[in-house]
Length: 397
Image (cartoon, rainbow, N blue to C red; front, side, top):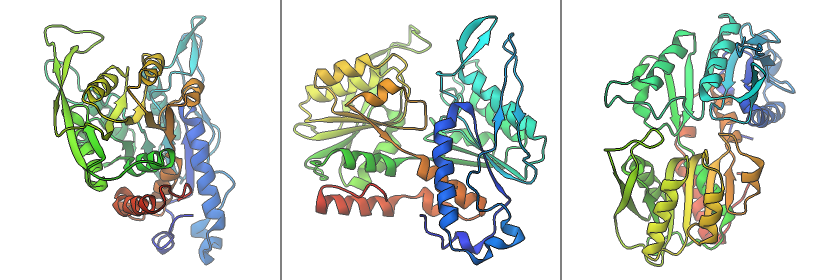
């Protein structure tokens, strides 16, 4: 149960409602379970007052749907009232496991389809909700965040469109470039990094790590991931290294310029465990190439840590990398769709984010500050001290 010192000093913004889109059903149910458990156990003498009406419930999930016609067109429906509610809409725009019928053919939902469904559900609210917060872990079109030639700025347009529909806050995780929030400077935008959950998953799964600069190093696979690598290295008290991508700008393959080589900047990794940290694994080609380069420099073990595991080219490339001794473990969060095959791999570890999201929702519903939640430094140092003493940590913390 979270620390209630801040929560009990404020009343809820409104009755809590959670809309877990079909793409985010599993995560939404876990978040809802935490909130229900916490609020039932919370000792608050004012829970019986009208300001706390509907505060304690078995479930805060608001039932909704987006049925589709045979032509592929759709509509958003709310199956219960949202009047006056403080609504939180969870969506995973990368979930390709959901299909719909288009002229008799089954089509997997694309990010565009998921984004359109969010707008439909918001429109179905009809302005009756008191506040709307969209929790979109993988920010829609976040890789199209800046203009380098005559092209669209899809992510900025998405943010502006959502606030024009009445969205008050947008919460995302590890945005490709958080400066995209400049598109909506007068509205709430929280970019959260799951550093604590990464460290927790790593320490729970590996009991022989030496958390010292003589035995461990953090690697950024490219210049774009350098900030998160520096932060992770600093909290661990180890050195950081970086690869930069040399690309062939004369060709475009699968929508991008192909990588010619990875060049390394940093101290020797010989005999050290290394942690490669990035925001996402797409095909995995870049991550595995970096791991290969590190092993060629005689690194001991390679741990791949990413917020989003998309695995767009399948799992076989990682199976082979594991068999070849290139990687030790791959850690990603459950913020995006995870196939049963992925969860069954012995090289894969899932970092659960549901408790953290529930904590954010609980604080925001009380209009309480989330500054301490967004800064996990103290919690991380506690876990590091615990690990150095016992070579393990408590799981439920």
